[in-house]
Amino acid sequence: MNQEATQTQRNNLRKDALEQRRLMPQPYRLQKSALICQRLLQSLDLTLGITGKPAADCVVGVYSAFPEEVQLDDFIQGVFARGARIAFPCMVSDAWSVAKKGCDQTMEMREVNAEDYRSKNAPFLQNPLKTYTHDSADLAAYPYVSAYELDMLVVPIVAFDRNHNRLGYGGGNYDRYLSQYIDHMSATTNGEAYAAQSQGAGSKSVYNAASVLSCRIVGVAFEEQGVPSIPTEDHDIALPIIAL
Image (tube, rainbow, N blue to C red; front, side, top):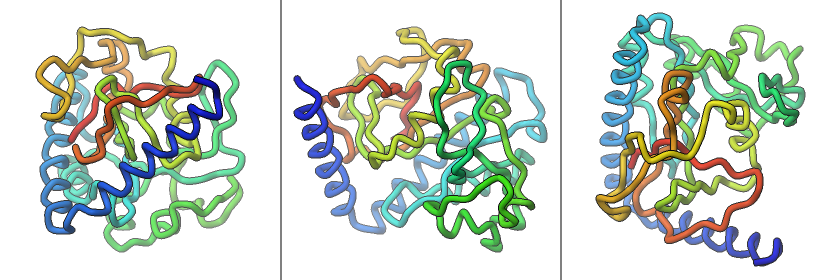
C-alpha cells in the first residue's frame, strides 16, 4: 500500500472510530469511564507493588479529557488520594526531550497539584491545545516533569486494533513523546494486557519487564473504538497496555 492510500485508510478509520464514540450515550460513556478508571487504579497499585516505590515518590502522567473521551477524574482523584503526583501534557514549542535519538517534541508533561487541579487553575488544562514556550509566565507554577520521571503514563486513543496499534487525532504529539521510551520497549508476548472482549482471549501484550519498571504505559479507549487493523507508519509506536 502506498503512502497516500495508507493515509487515506488511517483517516477513514479515525473518522469511523470518532463517530462510534460520538454515538455512545453520555450516561453509558461515563459509566464506562468509571470502570476504566478502576482498572487504571489497579494498574497503578500493581506498579507500586512491583517497584516498591512509595506513592509519594510516584508520578503519573494523565491527560485533560475532551467531552467525548474517556473521563479520567475518578482515576486522578484516586491518584491524589494515594499521595502520588500528577502531570498533564502541555504543548510547548521548544519542548524538552530525553530521547537519545533526535525527535523534535511538541509537548511535555507539567506537574499539577491537587488544589490547582480541583480549582481548574492550570491554564493548559482549560485549553489543552494552546502552545506555550518555556519562559511563559503561565507555566511558572507547574514544574516540568521528564519522561523518565514518570512511573505511569495514560495515553488517549482514537482507534486501536488487536495488535495494540493506536491512532490519535493525527498530530503525532504522543508518538513523538513515546519515542523517548523506545529504548525500553520491545515486542514480546510475555506481558499482561487489559484486553477488550472484542480482542478475544488470545490477545497479546507488547511490552517487556524493563519497560514496566521504567514507565507503565497504558492507552485508554472505549471498546467501541476498536477497528480490525490499522496500517502503520514508521513513526507509530504500539502501546504496551490498553485499558477498555
